[in-house]
Image (tube, rainbow, N blue to C red; front, side):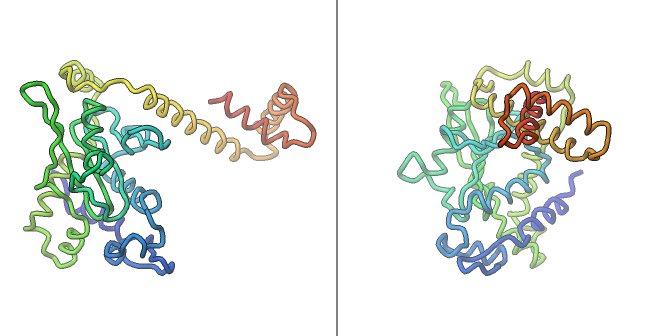
Length: 284
């Protein structure tokens, strides 16, 4: 039995963190920040500075870890979502600036509504699309029509308004609210659940053709590069943990000197720094 109140209090605690400022660099509450116009905030266009960090924390509560079961699009290249799930074909997700309009189709292809619809149609295989603008989540579902076409629908009755949830929670009116019902649906639907290797194999075997994700070479390249960077950071961390007088450090320094000689590093360059970076590349 899931403890929905625990999930809710953890997420509300994230929203209450001391991270919001107005254009005069004054600290404001989450509620106050949500009421500001874009130009009134310290960061005009706060998708990367405020919204995405909050989103990452919420995803972590739901059990998602970067490059383990969800991938974040780091390079702003191509028409691709900010996040997509790994291991399951559950959802793609886009973060938008605070209070951006994520509920209406609009008149251009560049609206968030049309972007997330396009991702669900073009990437194939994913069940849901999610938009987040700090204040609320909107959910979209891919529907396969009898004639084989794909339709994307906005689940209007599932909108999750975090600002309203916070107000209901503080006024102790949360239990009987439709908003809390939507929150329960949100947790039930998107909570990451680990499955066994055998279950995963069976899931793949039973997928219909239209549910298969089309291979994306850029997507795969980002996974590999992200793993390499994690290995590099770990190698560097372990190097920094060595005692300067230890046998390990002596052997490592000897190896770095050999690498420096092979690279023909000039005397005026930082021999150790360049050789260490080369060592980390080789190790990873």
